[in-house]
Image (tube, rainbow, N blue to C red):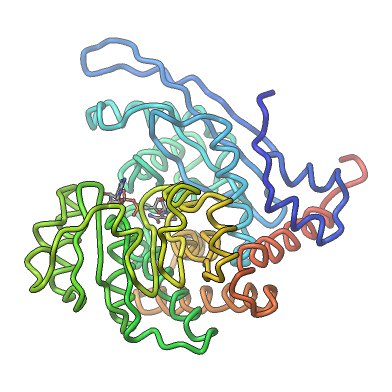
Length: 418
Ligand code: NAD
């Protein structure tokens, strides 16, 4: 078997909780790794073979749950780490799910819609016995979307009987949840507000720089602005723009529309009075109260961490800080709100989608929003208390809460024959 990437945060929490080496190893490694061949026809009639994976990490607390990504770099080692992260996220939010992740190593931008559909249907067929509303519930991730989930659910239904609860992130007309699109970014803004409150500071007036203006960054910016924050610097992959007075909401909305069309956002942002271009490096080094990396992993490293001037960094993307960059910020007393706490709004509303599908009942947007707000508040409070109300210990605290819950559930369910 290939080497499973170690999880130092798990090991640290396991030592604090007094878990045995064998329990720690059980939590570090996945329950099952599935690899399948995906033969499908290209539009030219030629045969193409892709390889797909599903890693089911831990289901002690409920069915496996996690995204499916289509990307050329998909590989089992990375999918294992991401599946494990899902287990900790669902546990921290006390959602009755475990953790999983999957994907196909392919470049979806090079496939036509018909090719994507054929590939997805073969993948769903190959996984049909391993997934299901009570077994493992996929969701969209990088390179996949509501349409891919619709094909997946339809194909799975041909084998197992149609049930929308087999996937989340579906189109609304197939039982998707209201409020899913904005859930992750809005959840990040809710956590930012809780963090300010816990520190006895005011969110209104806080200056914020946001790296990445896709789904998460754009919805975060609007929701943070609703809570009084001033979005003063924003970037996407093509460029960064600063506006010291703060970008008006209508201009952020035009930028969001450009981002949805996969177009650069700079033109929209530069229409704000007093705005000017800055470099990507300057955005990360902006003199702001809060920095929100919402684009890629590993953007703050040992080589640029000393440039960061923000007093608070909120990890809206997954793993935007390397472990040692995170330690350096901590040593400087910078508050780092970890990804598993900050960006779980999406999986929380995915859970609400599954609940609605199983109830055969649709919640309105206001209910989804208020349930999301309660979930974010509860997870924040649990983390804050576990940290001893120390803003430099939030990551350790979040892992401690999550791993205690998963290890207890795993212990209760271990049978003599296991
Ligand atoms: P997205 O594809 O919608 O947007 C990504 C944004 O980042 C785009 O604006 C893109 O231009 C920008 N970007 C890409 N490369 C960049 C670079 N080098 N410098 C600056 N900007 C760059 O993606 P998303 O759904 O918003 O996800 C963003 C991050 O949040 C990812 O790390 C993702 O894994 C994580 N995340 C997303 C969700 C979700 O529900 N969408 C949930 C949890 C975590």
